[in-house]
Image (tube, helix red, strand yellow):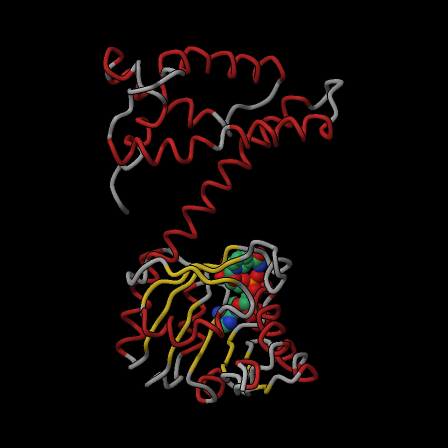
Length: 299
Ligand code: NDP
């Protein structure tokens, strides 16, 4: 008997938006008995021809399986969707994007209701999920036994990465990566704005931008090493003093091109703040030391 002969574990999925619908198709295609519920019932009914069992209520979907996966818009929608559902003895996996604090609070909430809990953050778009080789994966954190028990099912639509028993850590990893992505998008947007109206085609700048950003990817590992060692100076070849002086050229160019500098100036300001705090000490650093200024107190 091979693994593929084993009966597939049943599960329930609450939330059939763009992401939930793709997840549902993944589990159905892999042969998992799937019960679905969605606030707008038509989206659930649309999955019946593909083999989904359609629950009339969220509580009914929860009752249908030990493994309950939710993929709703935001943390608040879990309250309205799961109100009145009996979670006793359930394994609840939350694929809804949230903050680390929401993940921790939701874990406590689930525990109070007798459920085991795993929080998650999906790294990929619906077009990537369920597509082998697309690079999509999901961060999970919280109950390790729950993760180990259901890993094979959870990995049907996308690879799984367990990042610790702190239920806030899936969201922390998810949001850290997304935040870095938006910083990257901001810089790319500024670069394209600079060439607008010039005789430089975006499609000609594109490969140069990709190549340059790839080469600058060294910053990721460099920053990690320096933040660990707290040594911001050894081996520096592009000093903070030089970079702050150079940043004025970036700002003057933006002004010359008639482009607002709002997408890049916060980082340039941070470098300058670090330098001005102690020019003699910080001038020889690279820019990583400026990261230490960012933590200005939790909300
Ligand atoms: P959609 O906006 O397409 O769907 C949202 C889902 O949440 C729908 O099922 C909607 O029900 C339901 N919902 C919203 N509010 C409530 C409520 N108060 N009570 C009950 N159900 C509610 O979002 P996605 O499917 O794209 O995203 C789902 C989650 O996946 C989000 O947390 C998102 O951040 C995350 N994600 C999405 C990605 C993407 O690219 N789409 C990428 C990575 C993560 P109804 O159909 O009735 O409106």
